[in-house]
Amino acid sequence: MPMKILLFSQPGCLSCELMKVFLEASEVSFEERDISADPAARQEMAEKYDSPSTPTLVIISGDSTEVIRGFEPERLEQILVPTPSAGSAVES
Image (cartoon, rainbow, N blue to C red; front, side, top):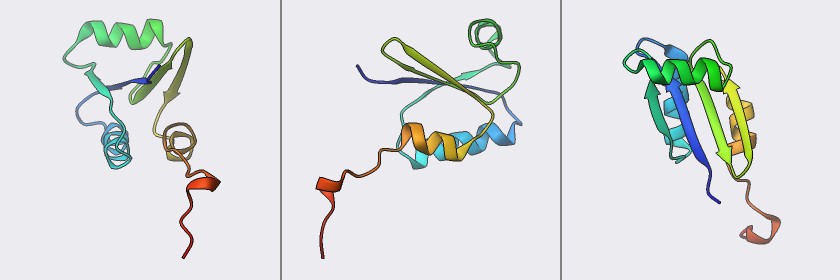
């Protein structure tokens, strides 16, 4: 089952912008939810994902849900950016 990624953000949030740039550069598809324009998104972020602030990234994969609060590039790389397998290395 493919991952579903939700990004809860708001205008004027530098960390939100950094998160979007990181995800786009890593070619990760995500659904952005602006909590300033969507009260239901703000409520979902706070109540369902227990997060008081943006950016909040929610990664849903099968029965597993991981919530990342704030911009943590090292953690994002571990979770979202695939590492090349030993068998796919190209020798020169």
